[in-house]
Length: 281
Image 1 (cartoon, rainbow, N blue to C red):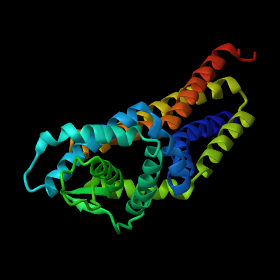
Image 2 (cartoon, helix red, strand yellow):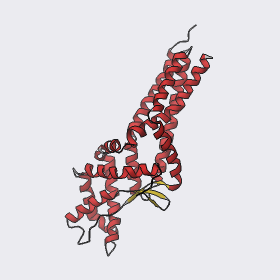
Image 3 (tube, one colour):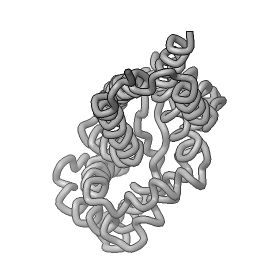
Image 4 (tube, helix red, strand yellow):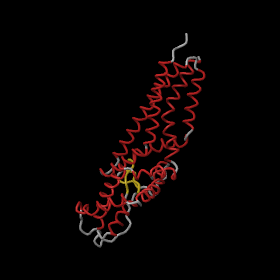
């Protein structure tokens, strides 16, 4: 009976683990605006994000200029927009602008996930959020350099899609569960592991279950995160949107991937421990 109960607890801990990781990540990084901004603020210095942001700013600013110019300039405008976008991204103020944009965006995203959609657009079946601050910084750079050629400059509203409308309900349900559990699921996982080891008549068998189960759980979570990434990227309207969303998504989840890598190694160690620990006679 103790053997069966220990194995049951070990399996339950492996089922709880991926949910606990996501819940903890949401609780520690995503739900609080200040912590979110502190997390995404430094990534403005990362090359991948800077390149994606610069390209997005170029494409978006070119389209914006076409809307205020009496004569559509199209790709011709890129000749003077590209240096301005590069200057904004290279500027010491870029991280400040980046942080301000993300601080404005964060309540919109949380509002969507919590069912409060004030200030959040639904365009062509997509949930969109505003990122006009970054584009306005480029327009200000252009105006200061005289590149707008007398065009009237005014702040613009620019949105970027984050998900499709039909995916919203699933995202809201998942967020509600994760927000409600917070760090408790991880605490529950640790408790299940300890209890399984304490009552097991043979720790060798439980270590094997924990090892194989942890590996399976982490691989399943990794697959779910990759699928989620693909869904978010596919929601983008333009290649520039897709590159920016992809870059931010990858950097934002980088710490979670590191933890998952550590747990995957721990699972392998547990499997090895099962081989090394000989059963008692």
